[in-house]
Image (cartoon, rainbow, N blue to C red; front, top):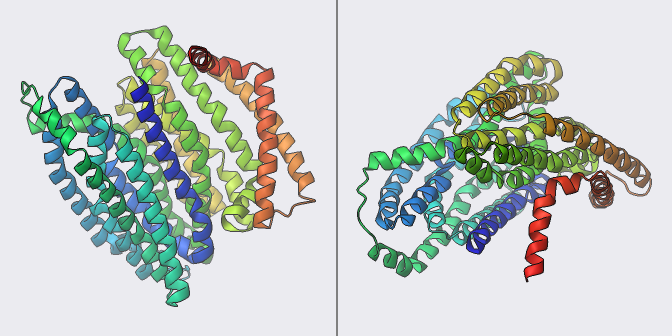
Length: 536
């Protein structure tokens, strides 16, 4: 158990470090390339995210589950057969994804670019999409290697390669953009071309780390293959059928957000041009899809990561037919998600101005969009968790259905709402689409797991009340401290966020403790910790 916990911790830590780096680099990058640069960067990365999700999402976990399953049976070469054939499959799929994105760049640029009044041109969009597409060559093979190591209960290679990949990418991105703009006197487009190519360079860095681990682990792997029982003869058809059954649900969850962003990229500029706002179009879309989106997904990743650790317990209870345990685990999952996500959302709303200033400089319009967008992060988190639960109770096909329905609603509402409310219209359409998807997922969970949401609703209402109290305290603190600190200054905005954040956290912790909410939610974890400390 300790080995499993250590492995999970290493993997989670590596994931968090990568995510933190993926957010922090935005501060110098946005200052370096400006609005024009980040607009182009966003136009390239959303299509790339979809291709990378289709090519790799779920592959590490699917491969690791498959290899672990047959390793347990002593059939070590079955997993190795998957790995050897997978190298060819993932190389070919990576090349296919690269060629598709590279040669479809002009078509994508035609769809994205709606008017000559925009600050970007079709040619610029083509250049940056083609630049980022090179990363698709190497990332799928890298995901297979990570899955292979995880299947052998070795989480270090995945965690280290993730962190190295992100560090190399960020360093190359920032250094490259700086050199192009300030030492070579290049254009913003050239700087973004280098910045998007950083995804490939980072991939090479992560891949080399995995190759080093592969060489280092060869003696151990060879010793396993010599112990192979050799009783299982499984066809490649059966192997890949099993892999696909594992990975498809993760593809659906991984692709959801980029698909909604792609809907904005394909429709936003044309809708804005139709009402004579083409000049503002690129900047308005950038507020939603790049600036605010980067910040809104922070609480989502933290809360869902914690909640998803409870999903294996949900799966176990469902398989055993233990309805009481299943209800308990579902209650815990939803309550922990709300407990962690709601204060982050309320915090983003009340501190939108100083938070936005820290990352992108002072911009009242951008701060307003961030505050407006923040509540949607709850829907993002709920969709991820409910989709994972549906997989746990073997109803993953409904996650696909809910995503398609949500996307259809987004597409139907997007243009009229954008023409009416510009960037806020796109956010409302996203909220409507995700709401429909989440409600369908919740209904399916309720029906097939015979689960009632009464307790979650009551506790959720209590959490909302506590968060409003916290919001009020932070709002007052912000108003008072704003007489001392200027929210338009990056350094002073940072101090404001730290001080107000500490006040908010203290108020929320105190109210949660006094209302016994903290005890009710984390009683089991507290007892386990107490027991562990007493035995040491």
